[in-house]
Amino acid sequence: MDNFVVSARKYRPATFASVVGQQHITRTLKNAIQTGQLPQAFLFCGPRGVGKTTCARILAKTINCQHLTADGEACNECESCRSMGEGASMNIFELDAASNNSVEDIRELVKQVYIPPQTGRYKVYIIDEVHMLSSAAFNAFLKTLEEPPAYAKFILATTEKHKIIPTILSRCQVFDFKRIENRDIVEHLKYVAGNEGVKYDEGALELIARKAEGGMRDALSTFDQLVNFTQGNLTREACLENLNVLDEEYYFRLVDDMLGAKLSDALLLYREVIEKGFGGQHFMTGLCEHLRNLMVSLDPQTLQLIDGSDAMRQRYGQQAQQCGLARLLGWLGTASDYEFRFREANNKNLFVEICLMKLAAPAVGQS
Image (cartoon, rainbow, N blue to C red; front, side, top):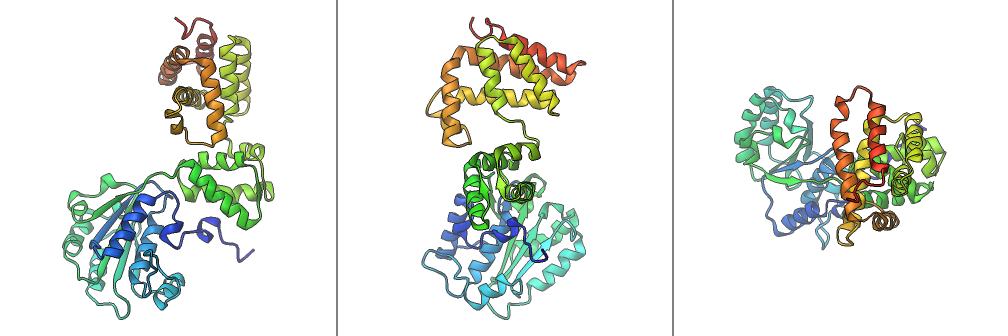
């Protein structure tokens, strides 16, 4: 038990090729290394858990590697790579700006910058959560960031790019990380599950990916939690129970009820959702998202906008064809209007039920 390492750390990528869902970033960084056109400062921006700090560490290791591979990756075997892997590198410094955000902290860092590396090619400074630096600290950093020694490289990372002052932005090459697509998260979870000997339903992994909202770290943390909950047998039903996620099956059933003008069944379905502990706002938001997915499923070209498995896309496509464009437009207009006005309602359950009555009425969307 003492040797347990969480999956987010155990399976942290060690090369650019193993980074998930950020190929536009890794390709640019590898090209810059191979051509020798490295800027003095990088700014990695994006949501939490998508690989900013991981890419910063890989970049720091790669530019100091003594035997780069033909495709621009670190060898992971030379003295520099080994010391980086063991956390003992004398050329790579990490600073958490959330707890070291004063002007004194930055002045101390600047003093270190002007001491040349004893071994290796570059001294690399990774500053995480850089938006937490105070205004005075930012100003104390400006000159060094603009004209550092040739051996110094700075990699700044932040989840809140808008808080970085323009004078810092103008001195950095900015890389915008994106949320990782659900399909990429699912594929990576399959790889982790296979290595760990965990049994799984693909539907369970899709639920984990949806819950993570584009963050691989969150997905792996949830994966560890559910492996413990299910004792290594991830089923969709167990994941729904533990994650408190509203099953999309409810919305497929609801649309079938709306197609058949089955008002009573629609109201009973909503009552079932409420009894499971979900609120009306959550239900309405999910309904609007489902109707949107049906809309984009009408055209094979826009079907790719649904971030899910091929089987799920096929199911959306089949139900969308049953609905038709006019009906879906009417439903989506009604549902989005009620979702927008939900907070103003005094009796919120009645408000949702009135919406369902309108949606299940035969005339809605057919005029």
